[in-house]
Length: 121
Image 1 (cartoon, rainbow, N blue to C red):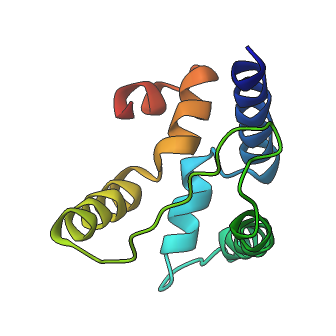
Image 2 (tube, rainbow, N blue to C red; image 1 turned 135 degrees about the vertical axis):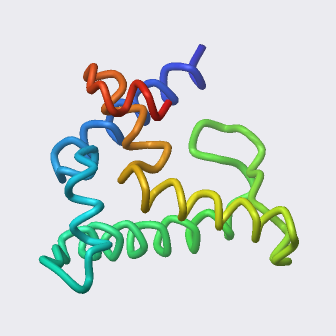
């Protein structure tokens, strides 16, 4: 129960962050990808902030044997770039470029009832 509640709160916080930053709006993402037109650098700032938070969190997590909730710490051990990762990354990028959605923001927009997101999901 404790794990489910923390997962729910984390998901709601993540979704709220996506909405607040405007990243659930595909026009924002497509504006970032339009480097030859009216480029919108705000997504780069959001990504940069996320990378900084991730670096701090993972550097802390690597030193732990159990999580804050008392569960075993399970961090990825592999660093290999294999065929599955490469193909998945290409699929992710193509979908992102065509629709302006990646999975997280698509689910947030889906929950908000946006038609384009419903089709995407």
